[in-house]
Image 1 (cartoon, rainbow, N blue to C red):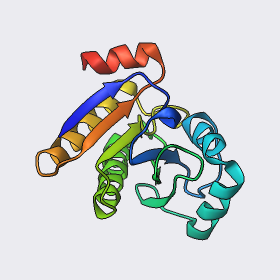
Image 2: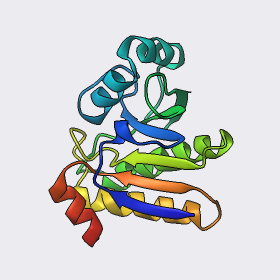
Image 3: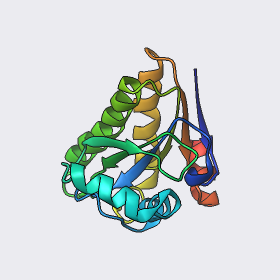
Image 4: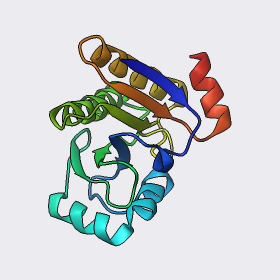
Amino acid sequence: MSFKIINEDITNLEVDAIVNAANTSLKMGGGVCGAIFKAAGAKKLQEACDKLAPIKTGESIITDGFDLKTKYIIHTAGPIYDPNNPAISKKYLENSYKNSLKLAKENNVNSLAFPLISAGIYGYPYKEAIAVAQDIINRFLSENDMEIYLTIIDINLYNLAKSV
């Protein structure tokens, strides 16, 4: 279908599923993770995550969307960027996108929104994180039919993503 980079709050989107940039313990964190937990109903979402935790870096799991407008939340543990081993960091980041897309497909998701995984406190360089997201999503869309959004709330990062 389509892939769009948008400058919107992921918690307000009316899509079948959103992706949460989670930690491996699936605990409420800061940034996009914290915003998703708050909007979904932190207590209910944490209880659901606790039943599925922990996950490994690059893995993904799925929960209900609870109080969000979305049916599902796909939680993926992106890598903490390692400047001494960027190839491993890239492999884990690719797996986060691939495993999230696989779960979305298995659950008949027609529209999906991603944040820019690992680009916040996990330190992944923005241009490289954007390139990985675009590459994996475009490869998936070459063989699958889904509406996919990459949501970037920071206007400077959004403009950077549009130029990459």
